[in-house]
Image 1 (cartoon, one colour):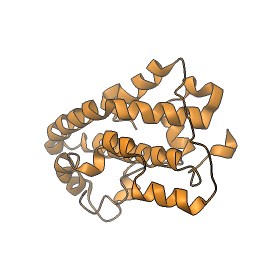
Image 2: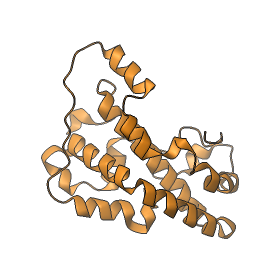
Image 3: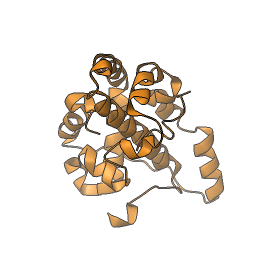
Image 4: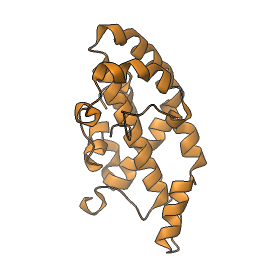
Length: 181
């Protein structure tokens, strides 16, 4: 649905899901890149596997809701990369690292991934985070809740795509040069 490409600034529920999907996408890109560095591979695999297991339900919710938003009746066909393209997310972490070396980013990832910033389940549940509430207030137009329903079929295929290789084939964290909160 071309009219829905990009970010839904006027729809706080969707915007929250878009932001969290971008965070998960960037994290998976960084983790995948770190696997190429032998000294970081095992710690990254372990930390990412634990994080992904805890966040699997939230990731599934994000992908199903965004697939419904972007692809409507064809949501069941959507894959992780389709959502990344709809959000215009990068397919490599390298450009986002800028002056930070991949080694430095990878060395801090196992600790950073345990911080509240990456608790997608909590962030999704809170929903009305200050930034989302501010966006809703700025719109100043009364709208009904988005009522996004996950696709009725095909969710297993999307989940398999997300979890394949611990979802390491999945927008970079907002600023990888700064330690996560």
